[in-house]
Image (tube, rainbow, N blue to C red; front, side, top):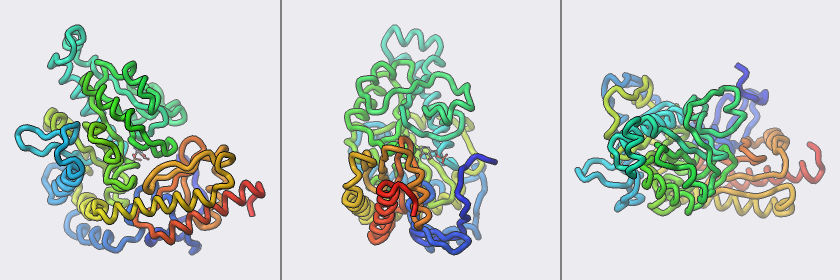
Amino acid sequence: MNTYARPSLVLSHGKGSYLYDTDGKEYLDFTAGISVMALGHGNSEIAAVISDQASKLVHCSNLYHNIWAPQLASDIVEATMAAYPHGTQGIYAKPASGKSPAQVFFSNSGTEANEGALKFARKYGKHVAESGVLGRGTSEALRGDPNLKCNIVSFTNGFHGRTMGALSVTANPKYQKPFTPLIPGVQTAKFNASSQIGAFVDERTCAVIVEPIQGEGGIHAAQIDFLRALRHRCDQVGALLIYDEIQCGLGRSGKLWAHQLYPEDCSPDMLTMAKPLANGIPIGAILVSDKVAGLIKVGEHGTTFGGNPLACRVGCTVLSHITKPEFLKHVQDAGLLLEQELQQALAPFVGKQVVELRGGGLLRGIQFSSDPTPIIDLARDRGLLLVGAGGNTVRLVPPLNISFADIKRGASIIADCVNCHFSRGQHP
Ligand SMILES: Cc1ncc(COP(=O)(O)O)c(C=O)c1O
């Protein structure tokens, strides 16, 4: 179907941070399949794991246990908890029983992870309404009709996916308008506007969903006070805080999770992930705090492919790399190098054609004063793949294990293209 606008080239293979088309032309890949190929293309270790697992067991459905889904779930929980071992908030709160503080549901994509999180929040909303723990007047109304605690708050410039629930919390008319009516009870508040939180998040809210660093919306990081205020307000009104880390998570920010760049009192109750978790094999997951996971009963949610041993085993391998301190240090250093190179090379344009350089780790954005599509096209001609984001922004999301030399090379091609486009106002 005609759902994607694509250039005519056809890609045939890749190695590391490079892709090759069927004519043999080489491209340095600053898109990484839109933040997916964290360990690069044609990764021989990943290929060996896929091959070995494919010859053993690809899929057996969730009718039966397999070895790798619980392994990946416990790896995710363990690696996450290591950031705040004495944490008390959201997913870091330790249940009294000594059980795991969080549990995992596996899906097949980011949007499916968000759908699950929204469903779990709906169930949690009913539970809070029925338990009558909120203020007296509110409790009576909600106890009378627990479905009233069903509202979801999301934010301007957020992106959460294309399926009906995820689309309903993605406040972009281009994506939403053709498919209205959407799910009811969704309100859009302004990202980073802490003062608006009280008005939007109330006793009828069951969930707030937000990206700690917005990707598709143009690489905008949440302010600490904003996330802290969301955490506080969610606790006040018995709503769940969902962090969508599908793009900014799993090492891209230079931490395992982008929210771990923030203090622990900014922690979520649920965390959704997908893109790089299995380096290109489709997978998604929801990390769910114990207090929420305990409410979901057998048969209430499910999927055929989610948690299959192939994707989960690859996920274990990817996670074993991404969680290494030296790997995350590399992401931070490569990100800083990219920032320095771009700042230097684009200095003559900053404040004019270049509005701002933004982001952290290897999730960076260059905001232009006009549509950057000609620059993206020019870069492709010169062998560098870039992807756009909201608000005239070019997104830079290379593989996380990209070399410093390739960071410099990419920055220099970008600078050439910007120079060429704005200085001469024409293509070469
Ligand atoms: C933050 C965020 N959430 C959700 C999604 C949807 O993920 P998927 O395309 O795997 O459904 C994306 C995809 O770009 C994303 O960036």
